[in-house]
Length: 360
Ligand code: IPM
Ligand code: MG
Image 1 (tube, rainbow, N blue to C red):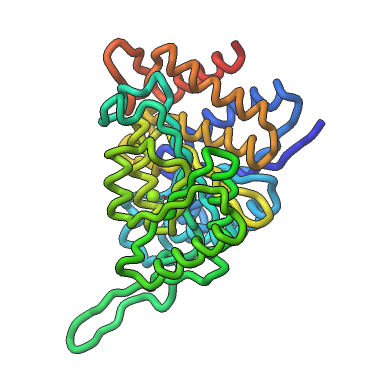
Image 2: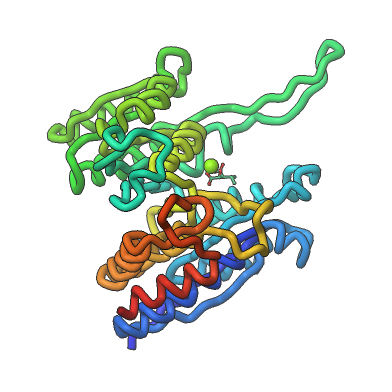
């Protein structure tokens, strides 16, 4: 029987609860589809700080590198906000992304029919939305140097550097164009080229790649402020949204809310080779941790992306997605999505319904 090694990183806050649900479903779907998953659970984020003093222990990074795919729940908690930056959970996540070379972050936003009324936007605006944010993940202002704090003229000055090499832009643009070719044929590249030099280089490289290799893709460019507005005004105009690390961070949270809850959106982070990292785009929600209130669906949908992209197990991936659709269509909701006439469930009970839908 085919066997895959999965590194599980439950992390902090609601992470362990949603990981338990995902694992239950992965076990069921793998045995049903004739393959085996062997898990290696490793500490990461705040949980790793408690255990080892480091947010990303070397042993965790090595375990990830040695696996076929990595499933991460969420990291972070306000209690670590005052630690020096290199000791914070978020720094561990950035280290994991760069350590695995995961430059391409894919964040699909597809509106599930039974959730149309859960959105804060009008039905006619969001019905049929099907877009994907392609976010550059290992460069830009998140990683640029120099950075830090200096004292000058009796003042303190904090600074970061937003920078991209041509090859960093080219490789993420290629991911965007390839996806556009497989999807609706449209790519919108988001930048701030009216102000930023780094964005002008971004735009020039995307243009050049379009002309050279993807002339059949319908390419447009949009400034990031306008893109933020267009996402809530008329999100159906978008197919593939290609953007840099910081802009993608912001726009993907905004795009997530089109679906009604940030608790619904999965993501995949991929490199040129080696295992991918699959994680919900939401955070660790420390305010509801250990209360059995979390929505496990983004985590389950991330597990589906892991099966599809990471292990090429398309049928198993589709089965997980179908169980989410079924449970929502049957009116089961966690608190974040609760609506009149629906049945409220906690995280564990939602997991049981998903399992039943998978088996059924
Ligand atoms: C995300 C998160 C992370 C990011 C944080 C936790 C470092 O917001 O994955 O979008 O900014 O990339
Ligand atoms: Mg974010």
